[in-house]
Image (tube, rainbow, N blue to C red; front, side, top):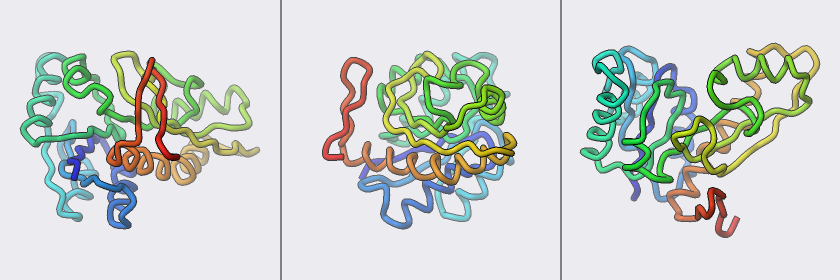
Length: 209
């Protein structure tokens, strides 16, 4: 059974999607073994407590630099024998110490179809504001491995979602969460835990899918 750490900075809706999927037996040979928050008192920590998942806070404000913070993260993950790291609304910058310790073992979900509306500055509602401003007819979500370059790691799964007339950023955000993020994030975790993901030349190949 692979041990999964979910890193959070807020409410934890994607964490909840993973918890629900695990309860249904939908993440395969994996178990959410740790919830790690970048600040105290976020609702995601309550979700962890309600589901009897161990949790810790490694607060960014307690560390003088990104390097110091990243080392603390690595130490926490290694001491808990973590096999897969899932960034679920984790909004804190980390450095190569984390990537080097967990190569192709950190995944993130982004609320757009990468390479559209991604990279530095594209997070939260800003992604959906940009999509609506451009007038795209389809948006969606992407699950990808995390690398030092923002939103540029190998793509594992993508799912398209229709953009409708009258959408606001908030409405589009909710639709993409419900129709895409909460579906493909648990699916990607399952694929990882079942050893069905191979990365070659920065591209993901899925076995038996």
